[in-house]
Length: 240
Image (cartoon, rainbow, N blue to C red):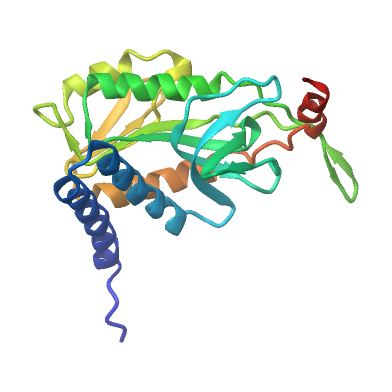
């Protein structure tokens, strides 16, 4: 009989993430380097465990009208139908059509950082997304409506007492539909997730693993990214 234990595997995954976030906070003095290290922990988690159809990078998002988002800490995006991925000297730009989810990664959560994440999410959701018919052996499928872009915030700790209580709910509930956060993780305390008309807070252990599985479930329920209209981007070749 196997000695493997699924509960232990899931628990160790969370312990690894929380431990690395703690190390980034305690061992790195420079604030920018500390933030970069924390982002790298979350990036590594998603790059390692999300299915191969999803890519994850720190990036700007652009639409075919030439509008850009601010830089986003973690962008979960598609490569099958969104081939225009631009890289230059470590910077990345991703077309809006390919984006499935965006997250801000911070050391701790508070009202200002929730508002900051909401603004970042809104900036991506407001970008224009094209969609073309998809050819197949029997003809073509009609253009697919762009899927909902999930948004959230990821931190190690909370500046609130209690860590995930009414203050968090007040900050989350204040958002417009375009800036609403769908899910988040405070690794040392728990997770939150958007319901149809409110939020749930989960204070159980293994928060990082719970967040990862929740994100996977939401991505599974989302439609595939639309096939972008390359000609809408190509017209910019004629601009000075």
